[in-house]
Structures are given as structure tokens and as C-alpha cells.
Length: 497
Image 1 (tube, helix red, strand yellow):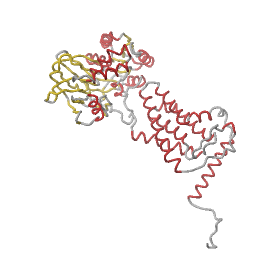
Image 2 (cartoon, rainbow, N blue to C red):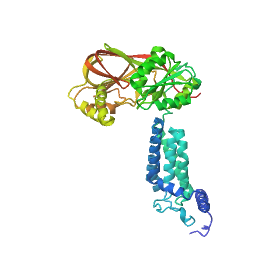
Image 3 (tube, helix red, strand yellow):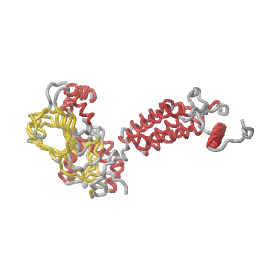
Image 4 (tube, rainbow, N blue to C red):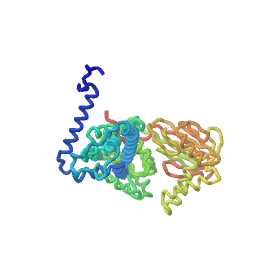
């Protein structure tokens, strides 16, 4: 060894910088341990323990989803997905890459220490990563729920330093990783705001300050009356009519005769009835979701009372397409979907049993009975060929990520009927599942898809069931489908700028 080498010289460069940062980290930990935190003693250790294994965040997600709004359910799901990705990254890469020991507990008061000390390495903090991932994921979908969750997430992160199980840098690194996981999830699954339907074509609709000129009709069968009254509280000049379900068509027609804007609160079937009245009277329609699925309202971007009230007061609206069907036994319109075959049979069979055994059991029983039947529910001439069919679906506009059930429309005025067909044959359950998995594929052995402006079906047997926007009727002979482009004017919140 050369005598000119000075082993006592301080190291420089990246190693020296890291040494200084670690020393600063230790001093900050010491300061936190010696600091008096008023009111934190009974709270932070318990909060820290409650976040073990994500229990706190699963409970928070359940509470958020219990509000029953679509935005809240999406926020809860996104928060849990972000948490899952953050936890996977921490446990597979983070803890294994940096083998940093936990801080010494000597300066931490005994009252703060956790009864069961963690045995994993210190860097980065898994609790901070989970807290930041969940809170960021929720906030990316719903700013309001994000603001509610953020203080809890911040407290969990701070509690890890307070209880002496992590250095401050462990917490900061974990929080950064968790937030990054939430943004990574958003990159894989865009938020509703990122894929908002285009607000086109815009329509000139009257602004209704205080709701003056709005007559909103709802029925009292499905608990929608409370939502309608909440809208009236926000728009005190609006008139709200609550009626029995069987009286709804007549009340909607009377309301259209005196309204400047016709409003409706209910599910897709109720909205369909109100839309017919609005079309007959040439009125704009205001839709407040009040049913189980609410496809039309949600595709418009109206998820709750605030969305609709804002659009009414600002005078924001668009024109949308309407689908129309006609046969020898009448005609009707649909805002969402039209179907023949298995689905109408399932709906009819479910309705027979729902009052006796409940909705979900009735749905399962209906599926078993219909899919085990030896006959095809439908035979029709389609694209020049007569063939047995298990299902014919037509959407009012293009549905994205759709299997057998409607997905989401990004354009409510694209001028097309989105037609999906499941061919007849053996093993109907397998064929329907194959069609669902095929999704948007234009053709598969069991499934075909085409987009057209009109469609003609002939040779339907008497008593063939037809479903439109969740309602069921009977047809026979010939059925014609067509689009009424931009026929209905509706209120919807428009993007600023």
C-alpha cells in the first residue's frame, strides 16, 4: 500500500451527499421524537395500527361507495386499485432493494410506541405508500372525496414517524411511490373526466335561474321523490310533480303542456316516457338519475343533482340522437338500447319471480330457465339470411367496451345504430359468454357486429318479446329500426372554456 494514501480524508461526491442526507434524516427523527405533539397521543398510534394490511383504506372505500353515487363508487375502486399497485411495488421491489434498518426507539417516549413492532426493513414506508396511493387515486376521480380522505392519509403517514417506526425520508419516499402508483393506474384506466363524451352538438337552451320554467315529474315507487325535492331545494322556482308509477305517462304529458323545460327523475324506462312527451311538445329535457342503472343520464355526464342544477342555471345543453322502432303493432323510441331474443326473455321471466323471491334470486332463476330451454328465442331474417339468433342488440350510438351488456357511449349524436348479434346454436350460455368476451370485435364464430343507420327484421313469430330501455313489449312480423339524428335536446354540464 502506498504511504501517500490518506485513509482519514473525508469522502466526496455522491457518497458524501448521501451521508449528509442520512444525518439530516436522523436529526429530523430525533427532533420529532423529542417534540411534544398536543392531542396526538390518543390518535396517531391507533390510526397507524388501523392502517395495517390496508384495513383502514378498505373501510374508507366501503364508506365512500355506500354513498351510492357513480362518482363515489369509481373513486373507491380507483383508490383500492392504486393501493394494490403501491403495495405490490413496495413488497416486491422497495423493501428488497434497500435494506435499511428501523430507527432506534431510545428517543421515542414509551406511550407513543406501537405494541407490536414491524419486522420488515424501513425504506420505504409501506403505510405512507398505501395512504398516498389511496388518497391520490380517490382524488383523481373525485376531488371532493379526495379532500375528505387527504387529512386521514396525511395523519397515517405522520404517525409512522411519530411512533418511531420510520425515518422521515422513508415516509416521503413511500408517499411519492404511492402517488406515482395512483397516476400509473390512471394511465392504464383513464378517469371519467379524461374520457368525457364530447359536448356536441351544442344546443341553444334557456337558462333557468332558480329553476323557473322547469316542471320535473317523478314517481314515488323507487325512492326518487327525495332526489327530486333536493333539486327543488337547489332550484326553488322549479315545480316538482310526484305521482304514482301508473300515472306517470299522463302526468308527464300534462307537465309538458305547461313547462318551458320538461324534467324527469327516474330510471331509463321512466326517462324514455318523458322523452316521448318532450319530443311531442318540442321541449328540451332535463334528466335527473333516479333509477338503478341510469345509462342515459350518466352518458350525458349528469350523475347527481349538482350536475343538472348547474346545467339548468347556466343554460347548457346538447342535441342527441333518438332510436325508433316500428312494427305492425305500434312503434316506440329508445334512448339507450333495443334488443330481441334472450334479454327480453330474461326480463320477462325475472319479473314473474321478483316479487316472490327478490330481484337477484329471480335474475339467477330466470337465466337458468331461459338458457336451459331447447328452443331459440328468436328467428329472424338478418342481412339477407334467415337464421336462429340468441340475441340481437341495437344501441342508440356506438357502445365502447361492450359485451352482452351496454358499456359506455362517448358520442350521443354519432348517427349510427350499434348492432350486435349472437348467432343461434348449441350451448347458448357458452355462446353468450364468447360474445361478451369478444366485446367490440366485429366478427367471431358466435358474434357479429355492424353499425348502420337503419335495420329491417322480418319473419318474427307472434308473441316475440322486444325490450327497449328496460321495458318489454310483444311484436310480430316485421320490425324496422331507424335513427332520428339530433332529435332530442337535453341539458348537460359543458366543459368550461
